[in-house]
Image 1 (tube, helix red, strand yellow):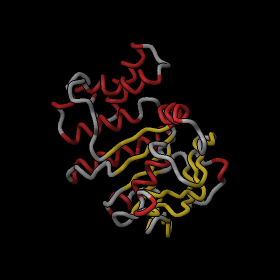
Image 2 (cartoon, one colour):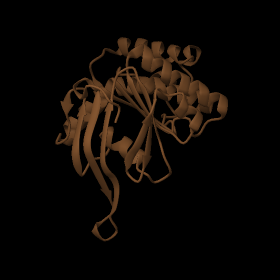
Image 3 (cartoon, one colour):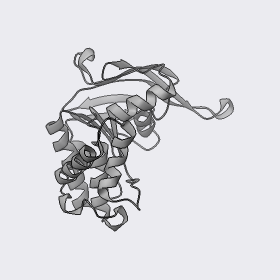
Image 4 (tube, helix red, strand yellow):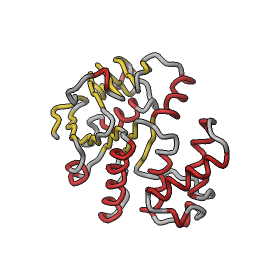
Length: 234
């Protein structure tokens, strides 16, 4: 899915299968999914509830393991990577944005951004703080760097979550219903940020969404049904 040179894809998978449940009630959720994602593009995955959209996102994001198939992330074959290797690759290569922001409420916006950088461990404290302030500025929250997360509005919290996803400058951003908990105005702000930042930072952004307006504004729409992609629109 998404024609192009697979060797230049920043994320690709081939023949990915995923089963959920035990042997007596096993569900075949992903049925041989293929995908290529390229830098600088925004992709929407759409389809009915239960078709495998979120399962695929978590599998590509190394939060879950595929049962069959191959996954390559930024030139690294992660198909058989150990848990430790997957954690390292996930921290370095992938930013996540979820429907619920999952910020730590007792920490400031800046501190929420510093945490993933601290986990990676390749920046000094002052450098991390400066980068956090720069990222918050880029999402329009430069005046709220020291505001506690639980003192921000829902839209502001999601914008902090986007900045946090970019903290380690990942080539891939995966977003699961990032606007699903927001009103129309804040949904547009959040999507515009994801789209503009993908172009500015040359990142591949993959969004699972039920919002047809958000999907139409992406560069590509991947339509999913019963665990496989049916079509791709651009």
